[in-house]
Every structure is written in structure tokens, then in C-alpha cells.
Image (cartoon, rainbow, N blue to C red; front, side):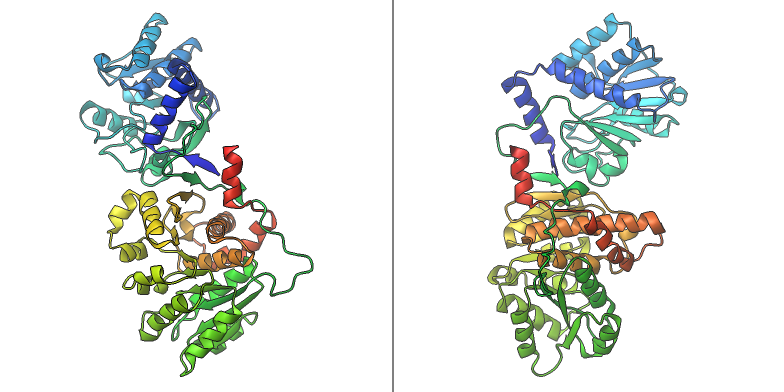
Length: 508
């Protein structure tokens, strides 16, 4: 799990390294340039003829240093300044003078189609206004060039904190980012501009202050120490899961959710569903117990299921009819057991969000963007502009763990911190994938994890299983049950460390 810093936090951390730790800014700039040159030598870039585009800020200073280093290595490199020398930072001005002393070639009108590699050092993470004028023209020229493009720290034109495009943005093949990951390189649409991202250590480390907001990047290696199955355990030891799902003639969502809960380690699963689904679910998934919520005594059956269960899932294929609404409300009012709410459960809550704050159950919400929009009243476009902030805001307001699903999944925690998952693939955008995720999280709860840990573990397991399925079947052919069937393969090689322990270890 790696820390992610937004633009303000990165600026403050830079200043801490320079002014508190007494690391000279020029040393940091040299180390950044060396990291870029090391990447250029990695074999994926043709350095027969290189163009370095630089602005007048410190990102441009990094680029100027790269041009000088390449010149000293006998690379045919040309340096092009888009900014005004009068606006140079002190470090960039010194780098320009050093470049002059070493006879670095400077051009004003690049022959765009003649370069094999273009180094983008126009803007760094501090860009705060739309790109226009010569900068916009040069960005479009770089994008149209046949050369491969390497961006320095972040693709120019991408907002470092949100990943939004500031009018125009470089479309890089690779990006070398420094010290910490930036949201702009990981969130779409910025992620589509960054290409493959390489994190380089340049001598900038965490400050002594607490980061607000606290943003972390989930990695496959975080699937450490999943609680081992007790050798002398029984089926009740590994979690009894109650899943309220499905409606008349809609049984697939309940089947996929329950199957995933089993595959993620649950010992027992009981499905509460419409009477029409009873026989088909019993035949399709005989491992699960099935009972119905449409009789006159449905509340007593529900109470019996709640008393039996350790963890509860609700919403997959449930519908939004009168009985479904009553069911969601009754679950929130009648239990304090951890609960995962998905799909129609979220659609019902969108008209009754106060139910989240009057209930006693620890809740995990798993909305996709449309469901998140209905829950919050915020248009999808606005949610996509700041998914980290929006997921954290809903989590703080409701006290729930919010798993906001999109091309990048963001987990908002009630303390205001967020976790970002960038694993997974486009093949997972398929019917039933969300139902499998809900079941996976329920299975992780069944292993004894806290709601926050179960959400992060479930998201990672689901994403890694999806990647495994895509490797075997291709993204276009992937179906939800392909993800489910590979959960066990991923779990077999993984152990999990609680989120709180990971954070504490990193701070030490």
C-alpha cells in the first residue's frame, strides 16, 4: 500500500525536504533528471533523436537537466523552451545556465515528425488553470508526432489532484513520477494520458505532519495474511452469511452473490429471496439454504435469518417494490451486524438516506457511479471530477464504508481517508460483476475482517480475479462468473495484513 499525495501535499512535502531536511532543491532536481534518463535507457525508447519540451517552472528545470545529461551521453537531443526565461524559478534559471555552459542544443521551432522520443517537461503537478496558447499548440504537436513520449512527473495538462484534463494534455507512453504517486496519474482521464507509470525515489520522503486527506494506493501485495482457516474449524467458524437478494423471476444476481461469498471463504450462506426463485436457486447452488420473503410471516422469517447470521448482504436483484423497501428498512432497524448494501438496496436508500444514520449496523455501501449519483444527488460528471473527495464525504456523513465502483474503484472510510484500487480491467464492466463483488466482500467479512479491511480485501480479490480471468479468456469475453471462479486461485497465494497494521508499519 503506497501513499498518494495531491498537488498541495506534494508541494508541502517538497518544501519540507528542502527547508526542514536541508536537501538542496538542485540536488532533488538532479536526482529527478537521473531517474528520467535511467528510464530512457531501459530499452523501450529510441533515443536516436530526442526533443525535450520544458516550461519555466521546476518541472521545466527537470527537463533542462535531462537535456544536459543526454548531451553528455552523446545523445542527439534538442531543448525547446515554451515559457519565458524571465519567469524561471531560481533552480530552472540555474539549470538553463548550466545547459548553456555544456552547449546543449536549443531550438525554437521543432521539426516535430523527426524525433524518435519527446520528453514532456512543460507543466508539473501544480498546474491550476487551463492550458492555452503556445503550450496548447505544442501539446497537440507532441500528441500528433510519431515519437514515443515520456512525461516528467505528470503529463502536462493533467490536474495533479483530480486527473481532469485542463483543456489540453500530453498523451504519454510512459510517465516517471517522483517520490509519491499522484492522483492525476491514477484517476481517469489523466490515467489514460500517463501511460505506464514508474515511481522514482529522488530523496523526498514523508513529513512529520499527518496528511489530510490520507490517500493510499492498494496493491496486490496488500493481500497479505488473509486470516488462515483454522484447522479445527467447522462451517460455522468461517462466517454465516445472510443474503437478501433477487425478486420475481430475477435469480441470477442472488446466485452470483451467494456463489462469490462461498468462493471468498464463507462457511454457510442463506439466501432470502422471492418464492419464484426458490427451486431454481436450490438446484443451481445446493450449497446454499434458500427461504422466501413473500409470505405473511416474512418478518419472523427475517428475524430468524438475522439471528442466525453473522453478516448480511442486501440488494442484488432485489427490486424496489413495496416489500423490498420494507425489507431494507427492517434489516437496518433490526440488526447491528455488519451489512453490505448493493444495487437495488442502494436505489431504495437514495430516497431514505436517513436510515443509514439511525441504524446500528456497520455498513458497507457499494455504489457504481449511477447509484452514487442517486444516493448523493450529485451528477455523475461532478462525481468523476473528484471521486476521492466524494466517496470520503459520503463515508464521513453516513459512517459507512463507501466502495465507489468505476474504472478506478475508490473506498471512502468514515475517518475521511480513502483507498484507491487501479487493478482490474475493462472486461469486468459486465453484468453481474457487482454482485460478485458484494459476495466477495461478504466472504471477507466472514473471515473476521473489519468492514474497512473486508472492503479493501474484497475489492483487491475481485480485481485480481478479474485480471486472471482476462489473461485466460480475454477482456471482451469475460463474464461475471469467470471472476467468481478464480477467487480461490487468488486467495490461495495471498495472506492479508489488517489495514491499520499496514499504515502503522509504514509510519515506522
